[in-house]
Structures are given as structure tokens and as C-alpha cells.
Image (cartoon, rainbow, N blue to C red):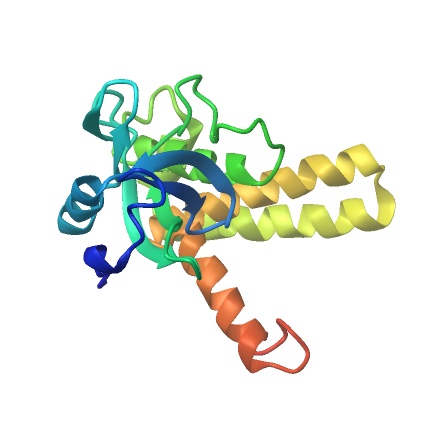
Length: 210
């Protein structure tokens, strides 16, 4: 990734540029902070998003105390060269309140938080965690559960109430996410594949469907 730091309009903001942070997998807006030339250079060099704290007048790497780093995917510059769009993958909750973003938006961000939780269960003791037991059982067992849940979703759609259908859909999503983790595939990977298929197919997402 190449960003020419010197070509940005640092003078307009008194040496700082607003940086909008967007989840690279879901496109959710996570937070707004500010970058200096030094913090941008550190971000590019380390791959972890670093800002400039206006209150402390110092650089700060997001997650340096909590461990909830923002892993850089790419950076876009707006047309006036005075605003940055930072696409990143969060390692955990982004806001200091423990929420997935700083704006109290009710979107799909919990799925990325759940992805993090499932990842943390991998390799953990299977005694007290259903997720850990699933992962320890291996791909065939997880795949079987996904198949069972898919059938239950279909049945609930035809014969069940809205609440039953929603519960079964949630079960299917959860087990599918465990299977994704087992196969080392992320939500961002799935999102990227859907975007590729959408761009290539006249009928949207049908390309490649079996």
C-alpha cells in the first residue's frame, strides 16, 4: 500500500487530518480520530492503525492498552486530500465502552464481534465451551451441524412462527461462522467473494451458486 504523506493537505487542519475508520469486512463505520504525518507513517509501517491524540498531544496506537488493535487493510484519500478513510479489521470492541463502534449504531457489527469470540475459543478447553467442543471435534462434525441447522431453518420458514424462524436462522449463522473459523475463512473473505460475484454477474450474486 502506497500513500504519499507529503501530498496530503496537512495545513488545512493545522497539521492533522480526520481519519474515518471503517470495518474492512462489513463496511460499518467504527470511529473517527485524527492522524498526523507521523501517525500515518507509523500506521503504514506497522500495519496497526495509529492516531494522534489531541488531548495528550502524542501518538497512540489503537489497542495499545486493551489489545483491541485495528489491523490496517487499506487507506483511501478523499478528493480534497484532507480526509482519510481507513479500512481496518478490529481485534475486538473498538469503543472504550466495550461496544463494536463509537456511534451506537445497530447494524451487523455484532457478527464481527462474534467472529472474534469464536476465534478466541479455538484451542481453548472444551470442558466449558460449546464452541470449543465444536472446533475440537473437527470439520466433519461442524459441517454436519451446519447441515442440520440449514434443514431446521427451511422447516421453520415453512411451518414455524416468525420467532422460531429467527431463532433457527441465528443458530445457522452461528454454526456457519464456526465452520468458517475451522476452515480459516473470515467474514471479510466471504464479503469480498460476494462483492466479486456481484460485480461479475448480471443477476447479482447468483454466479457460482450450485
